[in-house]
Length: 444
Image (cartoon, rainbow, N blue to C red; front, side):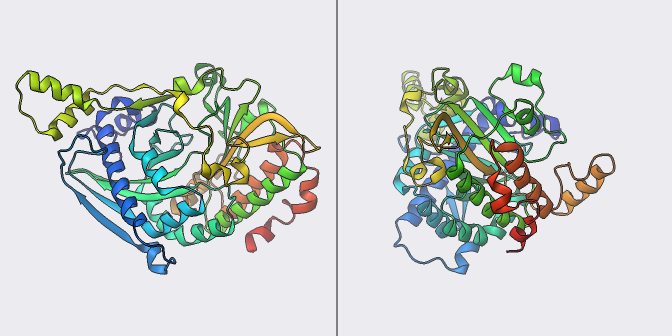
């Protein structure tokens, strides 16, 4: 799956260094990205063109195969390579995009125009890599085959949960796909929503699991990169709190409990609450996104002109391959990012300028905007995680480690959010009784 690794290298360390933050150096990733986007464009166009109908049980397990040949029209956006593409549960994801308020034409234009590469990498240790759409709204993330398989297994329950909880904090998945390159591995990937708003600098980012062991990003790392993703112990050491008044606090905890209940029922653990903090008084004057976002657009026309001048006769496909190899990422023009998008307005947690504005105990607005989302929800408590739990329990506090049973993980996660994350929580034990009644949430 690790398409970032050089083909001949068998050393896992070689694969690791080319992941995440090193994307822009591996030109074969550009080719892979083009193939992904071409597949998405054709697959989504095909399902969108059909008359809507109710979802059936067969739709959850459906998989449509598409084969692409090298095409010669350099003006057509997308890949110019031979590859195979698989589109999973297209009707279900079409329905999910509708539920989330994503316009199909908008979705395709956003994904298949300019491409943005992130230098931020994944908050987790998954080894996945990310691409962002041109307007920073959508993320393409490669996933392991086990995650892909698990997602297909839980898709029906996830879909039903979205129907019942339009304001869910869970990852918003828009598509599940697979690309197979000639003589290459099968690469599985998802398209999902970016938790962070397109038009706001994120001044601090935290990935919170409610676990304390190993959950600290060292200060020297933060000094090197002030916008690095911090963890639970950084949150506590910096004495950070979510400032949400009674009204928003009730919405947040209520949705969190419903989401965590589902994750526990599906035997899922190791997820996090991703929190992005935007200081409204600082605004965008730091230009954070100017330094962390890059665009990639191969200049096929200049290569074609050069070839013509030198009397070289090359196919258009060869021209595009050469252009991709020569392309350099350019800085993103942040002015082109949208101020607000429809799918964010539809959700209560993204409705305040793309996020959730902080409030005081009188429900009056505060100058802070939060971006909140539960991420990494495709890890089941399987034999691998059970073994990790047993192994780590021998030398560490078995209740503090990350790998614990889903019900225990969920209870600990909710307690941490109520006690350590929220500034005021006096009304929470009263209403939700997270400690004494947590089991109730996992039974129903």
